[in-house]
Image (cartoon, rainbow, N blue to C red; front, side):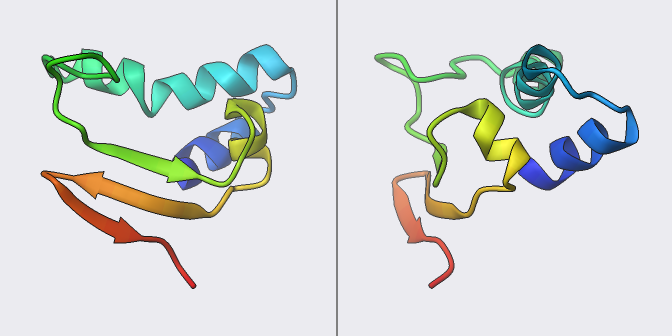
Length: 82
């Protein structure tokens, strides 16, 4: 998910922290909203599907193309690259 956001940041010359973090939201929360996914996000009662990346925040995740460290989907846990 980070590769398309990283490419968009560069192709569209998005350089501010606000623009880069908005791009992160485009490939996560806003994408789910556009697709009409219900129960998306970390909240009680929602499915526990998520991707954990090695970054302190959204800005750094895109800026460094942070490594995926954990993927949890449909109660299955996968670790990232070793």
